Length: 406
Image (cartoon, rainbow, N blue to C red; front, side):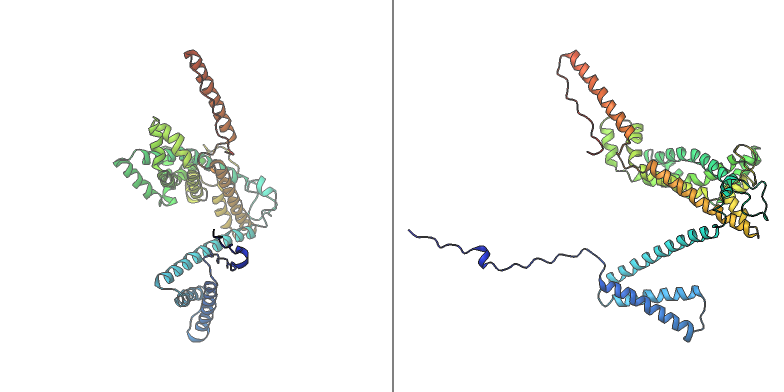
């Protein structure tokens, strides 16, 4: 009988294992930062040397352009020491895209800060929001007069324009996607061409058809129609792209259950694309709310409050800003920048409201919709139980609908 030798203890003779080095998922390396900073410093130094010592160049814009070109060249040269050709081109493309995005953010921030700074004298006055300019002139101080008439006009005009463009734009976008054909392609071509329609052309169209041909007076309604002409192609085009992104499998599953095309669009396609459709409405609103020339041609200008959009001239915030800043008086210029700041705030409020209304994801129900769903499930269970009692068969088990937490 042989006795097997004892195995040595694992902890006594096992060599200490070295842990594996975790792979870093960060794409930014130290060498990339050094190359970026070095190229930026070298480009500024070389551009300063060219503009001050070697060449007869001058001007801020020229300095920035030359410095940016030298920065790209030096950055590509430094990256080429560690990477090959495709990687160098990728890094250069990334730097160009990020720098352009930074320029856009800086320009937007400058516009906002400059508008708020120039309008700081008018915004603290309460009368600026509660009065009109009927009893105030260019020489009056900022404690007299306001822009209530322009705020009211903008709200009425954009509301009428949205009431006209949102339903028609959504219906047209659904038509372009659900009813394909030659006519749909023709409509899509016309819509794409109208997205670049100049605002003055839209104003002239409404002025020639509604005011001259039909005999209507200049009013807020005519201005709203002109804004609707510009907003409609934007909403249709953006909604068309969003609805086209809805997976076809969702439509096929709905059709397989025996649902009609209309119910599929209403209960499947539109809820799935809700957030994108909200974005299309926001884009259309942004296009129409800041226009000046259509309102000037179709609604005229007035310094008094006109709450009736069907008759009489009616001013909007962009038109009031344009009229205020034309004046050489500092108080009127301050009113103009204050009006522009109020317009930006109004657009922000409209965007937030649109996001709250349409920001829910696909299939996410509100509390009221969830309550209606539970009640419908209970009614279905009661109907099934009554039918089973009449036929003598056992009633099916009641399955409660999933809640939001599930």
